[in-house]
Image 1 (spheres, rainbow, N blue to C red):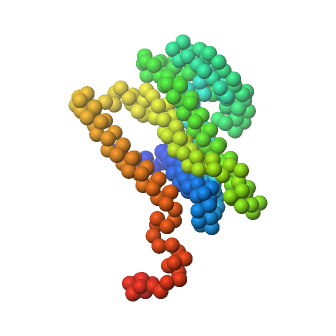
Image 2 (tube, rainbow, N blue to C red; image 1 turned 90 degrees about the horizontal axis):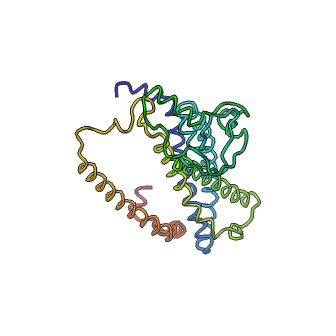
Length: 301
């Protein structure tokens, strides 16, 4: 790196970084929401979990709506800077103006033909340009342009991965927004959370941010192929000549084992303390308020 300022002024950073941070906020909000619903369904410490459900619903819903807003801006940026990724995410073979949004497309990447496709006219142009017109370039035109510019090769990423990861991300986000809006509606109507019709199913919502964030990461990385840096460095050219296959395999196994152990430990602790409830965090607040403080506590106060 020769210019840190250039990194900070990179326009891609200011759509990607907020999207990533807000994705983390969304995961935190809906995790707490799911755990709160779990305990409310079992009527354990209802007053505590009513408050945590209210706070997490407000925080999580605000976060996921901001993720959508920033994600919309990021998609428009992607149309300009990585048009092939958007074309693959929409299974769009031919350039269109106005461009249609794919509701469901099953395509054969080997033959370059759609086996089945239902598309909504104008909608992709609306998403890309905030108006019902505007060209979104297709994979055929981009493939021909890239061959002319960068040389022979296949510049179309995995359409199946790009297309479905895009839809898992959007679908999970919309479902979170609906659940959050439902909980907020119950709050505004001043109804009891215990009477919520779908209370026993709401704990499942805590998985949705993980699906959305993982799918978004897959779209980012797989949709960019065959590039590490689009237009500058191909993945095939980024491999160090000093690396041997055994070294790569050893590193891959080592990292997989390490992160697998960390993931298992994290999952164990999350499940343990989520099921235990607030008492797992130490002395209940009511008991602490009623007893006299110890000498050390009095000193710290």
